Length: 185
Image (cartoon, rainbow, N blue to C red; front, side, top):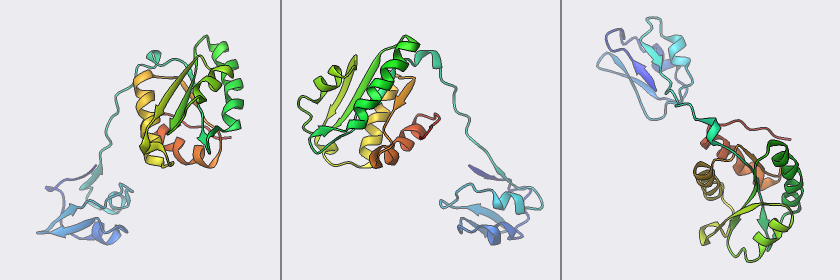
């Protein structure tokens, strides 16, 4: 959040002129920040009297010991599991065995009849299935929220996903939501 020290602000307007997003205006001799602020910091750098400060929220550190297991996002399109998901189950199995944890698959969509048993046959210990009409067509929001909610509930330490158009589209959202890292390719 951008904090303005109203005691220090002299209302010079430099911050207003510097803000490329039009998020700062000077009213009644003091800078005021609007909703379009992106926290880019250019106004902070331009303020000669130091009246502007960006305050970052401190995130609580998670107990990483509570997170365990390897998950594979099993992309399901056109009535079948994507081949990359089956390949990832093989890699995930090796990784899970090395770490001494369970391997799970996550299946999102609508009309997923029989797909879970195929994932078990390819090595998954557990399959989390979210079969819902809102997941009939892929959207970043719906799939990202579904996978993030499952991960918050069950706490896997690793999530693998194929570098398909769908995987590349929504997995960064999941990483951001879970406040974790992301490695691609």
